[in-house]
Each structure stands twice: as C-alpha cells, then as structure tokens.
Amino acid sequence: QVQLVESGGGVVQPGWSLRLSCAASGFNFSDFGMHWVRQAPGKGLEWVGVISYDRSIVYYADSVKGRFTISRDNSKNTLFLQMNSLRAEDTAVYYCAKEGLTYTYFFYYGMDGWGQGTTVTVSS
Amino acid sequence: DIHMTQSPSSVSASVGDRVTITCRASQGITNWLVWYQQRPGKGPDLLIHAASTLEAGVPARFSGSGSGRDFTLTISSVQPEDFATYYCQQVDSTPYTFGQGTKLV
Image (tube, rainbow over all chains, first blue to last red; front, side, top):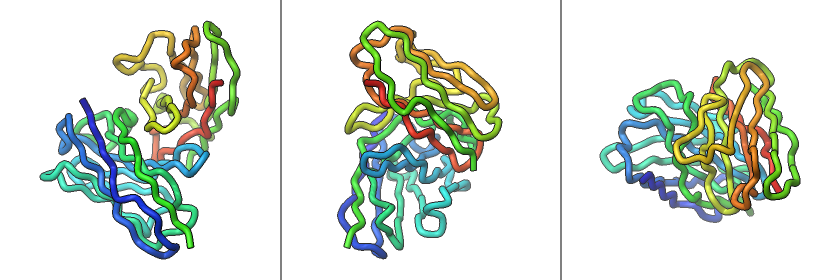
C-alpha cells in the first residue's frame, strides 16, 4: 500500500531555510504527481504546491511562490520541499501527498495517499 | 484564486443521523471537487473525487453531489468512526484551494 514518510521538520528562526523530504514506497513513484499541503496549528488545510511525475510542471501557492521550491528524485523515490526565507506564518505540519492520476499535468483527481506530516516551527 | 466556502463549520450529530455538508465555490468549477476526511493527528483521506465518485473502500453511506458552484457531502447514517473533520477542495485550477473544514461532533 501507499506509504509516504516526511522528514526534515524542526524549529528555525525567521529568515532561515529548511529542506523537507518525503520518502515514498508501495507504488510507482515516477508515475505520479506529488503535492505538498500544510496545516497551521488548529487550522485548516492549505495547498502548497505540486510537481508533475516528470518534473516538467511545478505549481505553487502565492503564499510560498519565490521562497519554496518543490523537486523530486525519481531514482530515489523521494520528494523534496526547499523552504527559504521562512516566516512565522509558515509554521505548520507539512504533508506530502500522492496525486490520484498517473502521467498527468492536470491534477483533477485529488490526493489519494498522504503521509503523517512533519512539523515546522518558525520562531525567534 | 477560487475561494471555497464550506458550511457549517461544525455540526453536531448522533449515531444514525443523516448529515449534510455544503461547499460553494466562488466561480464555476464544473465537477472538479473532492472531499477529504481528517481524523486528529492524521493526514486526510480522500473520500470522493469528481464531486460524486466514491473512492474504493469508502463506505456507501458517504455520497457527494453537485456541479458548477454548489456541492454537498452527505453521510446517510453517521457511524462512530465518522466523527472527524471534513474538507472540500477544488481541483479545477491552481491554487487548489480548500474549504475551511467542517467538524462533525
């Protein structure tokens, strides 16, 4: 079955950088787009961005555009989220999630597999 | 950006009750709407895609309907394991925005 394990979270100061990883197993990672979604403490879900199966398409939420970068290594079944210039409002649990459709640049299906999340806290 | 308005923010129910949650998009999204269930401390689970198609393994007491701007998630007979928070998300265009969530208590 689909298994996604996020890592790399921690406590950092405003302006610092952090790189999250998501190790995937149980499915053909290179066939599927992958998303990042975050959830601030006690709040709802916020979509962060998505990368297509072949890395050719990457979309971001406006709130992270220019600061965050999504990438993937299909040879290692791993998704990444590079977060720069972190702000207090980036404090959240970060989830990686698998798109439900294969070989697509149109992410119409929704996210049918999720990790357990990794916590990022930005505080001085 | 497409704004998703979910209501109510919280709904109280007893086992066996019928519950309906609504989601309205700020513009038409055809049927590109999904529903998730999230239990405390867990990542969400996809319940329904394309507004009304139940995911494999999701109990038939869950159903979705709607198109255009207005959508509903219905639980026909609430079971103890259904007490959780439910989110809609539009997948018509980026950014793929979520509703604010409905907590079933």
